[in-house]
Image (tube, rainbow, N blue to C red; front, side, top):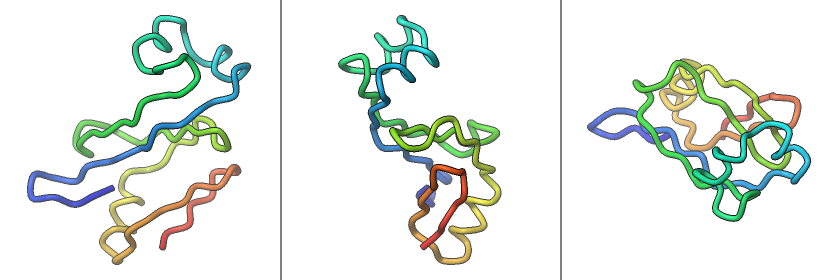
Length: 93
């Protein structure tokens, strides 16, 4: 998440899901729209005000929901990076 004069922006880098997980958790039309080669999902950026929470996906973490107020608290505490572990635990640095 990045604080800007226009508001806080969430950024999720592109990620690749294992083919079996990708097929089980997304639709063909969704993959066609958001995943360049079908398994590699495009990066996402959006304003914090446009979401209720943040859904985190990558090859090691699947559909972990993060509370955006907790993320904002980490930013306010001076942390600039957050790592989400496979069990959903957050580690701010």
